Length: 142
Image (cartoon, rainbow, N blue to C red):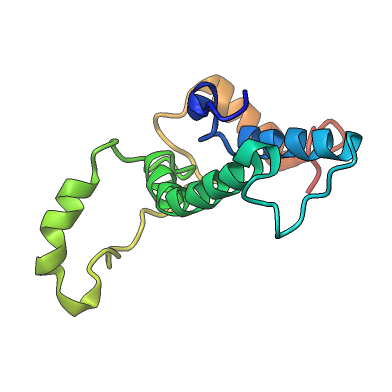
């Protein structure tokens, strides 16, 4: 590719591809006996190693807020939020005061353990009874 950065631009925001690009240039240098150290890092591989390191640094900075954003959107607890949830949070933020306001003080609904639910179908009831009874035919032993 040489000095032309254009073919690499779409791929450099995927961290493994930025690392792979650096690794390829380092491998080329090792094959032909060219050292890579602090004195030639900016020019090594037509500057590809240096630029890849800067891309990875930028990706790290960009991924920190993305982690919290994606964790809120794809919450494993089932409380996932819509993609543009933050404008509502920003509107509420000044009125919350110093208490933080995010946590709810209401007690969660109690879980039904070993009880009978009127809406429980016959097959679900049979499976629950079988699982509660235990025995050797259980897939997961606790």
